[in-house]
Image (cartoon, rainbow, N blue to C red; front, side, top):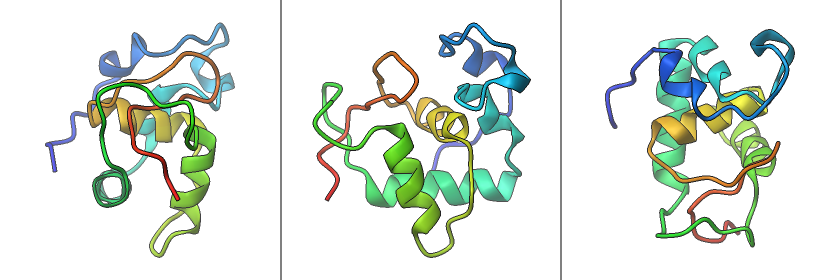
Length: 109
């Protein structure tokens, strides 16, 4: 797994929300609110369960659906949609615009 950088600047350019950071549960900057252990668990889950493809795929689960899959998985825990989006940005995935992002991943079954 890539070394996790704990900087808010990394996430700022990916937030298209007009609300303040604290008021926006969909802001990817919430990834930095997770503990180092939680970040590692989430990023490992992404590595093990998602397959990267070239282009963003809007025919699979979006960030909200993927976050739910993670939460229900063994070892998963509650996270904000924004924290999941931030983890995907951190892992180098491309994404769509909007509240619930699609990513460049194969269809999730």
